[in-house]
Image (cartoon, rainbow, N blue to C red):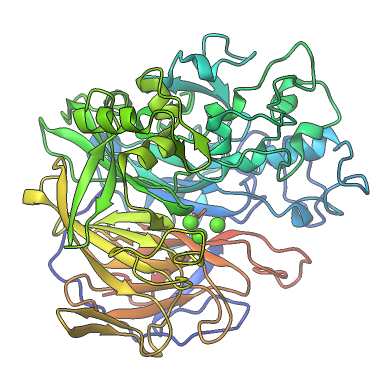
Length: 606
Ligand code: FEO
Ligand code: CA
Ligand code: CA
Ligand code: CA
């Protein structure tokens, strides 16, 4: 969807101050309106949102989900080469839920927290997760609306049928009662950031999926141990008051709740990038396993080159996890490109060296270096896991984190979103924070993650060797350290950024380059002084000038940003607001998209 990249990345607006107000703040000359809040009807019978929380599970399956996160705008004419900024498909993730706000009187549980959950509450919770595809159009007054009755309007939930693709399709560790040949599963969960593909589809990231499953087994497979699948699920869906396997599957014990059903491997069907074709409403989402199984935060594609492999980057957002790169084995051709390009290729993990260089380490048993490390690790303790080898390449992929440990990758301070500068090809990643870095019993600092108990985070960037995204080495530097007033980012002994009142921030999370090459930085951090409410800043990647552009309401994180191709309408997501934002007349908060425009109709940020 990129428009023509323009030369100016200057920031022309007056920065806004930090804020504790329960509203959105933008610079002088800009306006906002809230759009598609949780519960907005978008499909089916368009059930009206009920402000008292009494919408049913079936209603929620036809309404916008909760906890808006990654978002992309697909111009409606994209498939025919167009670039509409007036009509398109707004596709967004719903990461998780506020159970208290979702139901009329909060979630029903027995006093011991082990009680049976009413099945319709669980149905509603599953339906409030996933992805919304919303056909939207701007009218002649400049007002954006949902296109009522559009066939593109669609909800994908934690219960939608999906195909398993790539190296794990058919692999024994993904066999479930639902799919004895390990080719299918149901649902996508904890969808955090995302990435549009070069062929006009949407990849949604499965981040903290491990928390949705529970197992009573004392002995757990390494595929669960390395991710923290344990005896306690976040929302107790496996305790739904039913024997229907669409709910019982969240019990991944070797002896499931229902003796006839075996879902011990269900959690191995999660942890992927999931491809959704918003332009083909009947299409089944595809779990693209070649991109690895971990806590995917999102994915960012390098610019494509005709006849060259497709390259994309994805971070694993947990403390001391890694940054990955996928390089397809098949070449990209614009005329025939599609998701099949993501099914075969090499998955690499990043090692950041102290001298400012870096290496991409292949997680591939046919790679001599990796094979040697696997052989050397045999019989040793890798983290908490007694390593007894990989039975094949599928076993490597389903255990991506363990493979990265063995490969000797650099543990990072929670990689969140990545972004690729459209003008230079440089890759940026937000490292949101890592309060355990350098503490006793945890990994020490390293050159790329140099702050002990890093509570405020930083943004790293690199250039691939020869500016070729398929390269296996790169040169990196730190773009900016977040923090309070006076925080310096020093290059060659000189402070190239010193934060002040106009740009202090903490815990960078969302990152996005707009189509002109301005970098947008969103935060999900402490909302105590001096930072106050979470925010979005704009950065000039050439000069490293950074200015605060937007501050969210109380309690939220600001996550997910995209614009129309002309960069004159911007969509910014507000997740987990407190209180009654955005409608003071109601008594529960609603996650929502905020539409930002410039009063003079100009380019946002310019
Ligand atoms: Fe869901 Fe890592 O943010
Ligand atoms: Ca979040
Ligand atoms: Ca995030
Ligand atoms: Ca975050």
